[in-house]
Image (cartoon, rainbow over all chains, first blue to last red; front, side):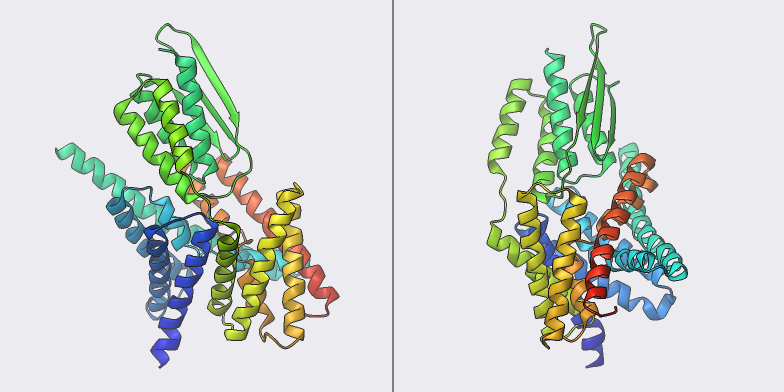
Length: 150
Length: 253
């Protein structure tokens, strides 16, 4: 029961949230399902890695790597740009809530909270970006390595 | 070969890629490959989120440059995939410019948009699922979905009135926050926090912020700063109107 409420349900919610956003970004057909599975997978990695690393920034990094690997694989399989999957699958992780709360602190005059929340939000977005870029860089390096050997 | 027409075609392609939400380096790279495939390996391409510059020198030694301003845009995955495919096909086949134009026209005819009710359903589903995701219960999800729906309607109405992006976000967030407050006061929802943030997910610039970080890491500093500023401005708009509405309603987050 604990496993269900702690791990399974949030991932199901993430799946449906991504599905909703597929409509907004005009993603159609099988791509919708792939994005949503990617979103759920990313959140599962985020939750599952919590006891191991004890830092939500590292968790975000690991989740972004998982999503990027999944997206690269699917993009290769379906021959379309990896952005299509990456963008929506990252949605449950992107710090939309963080940036909103940051600016709420800012206009509320709570400077300390504003600064710490701003730095944390930027760090979180940075970790996601590093995770995603790392995978695409490795894929690109592997491609030129394979091309050089041929 | 008519190099002026070729450059026009390439810049149109690049513009469409940027408009569909492609990353800067993808748009620049696609254009460079396209021009190289047509025998212009020394073409210069520079893009930032709202501007595209491409310059070539014809074999006769005549320089041609095009500057195109890219209008404000959202993300359209289908358009991105179609134009990406077309760009690859053009690099492979290098058909005459007139045929490439015909292919673009055929592509535009293939593009589809979701109808308004389906789009509204998307807003509802996304907002409801994110309300649950942020710790709401079933009632909160329903309220979040309704607030998300309100955002969709307000955004559509404001777009028809040709309001700017900042003002559009401001009003949509205000309406949604007021609705969330009313629903919680009426007893339909329990957690104001889960409802508002769930509904706001379609407005908050989380993706823009993450993309700006990716632009920084790809070395496109100007694009990164431009997207970061946009993200902060959008977040300020949401926070401003929410802060005012919640203060008027006597609630705290």
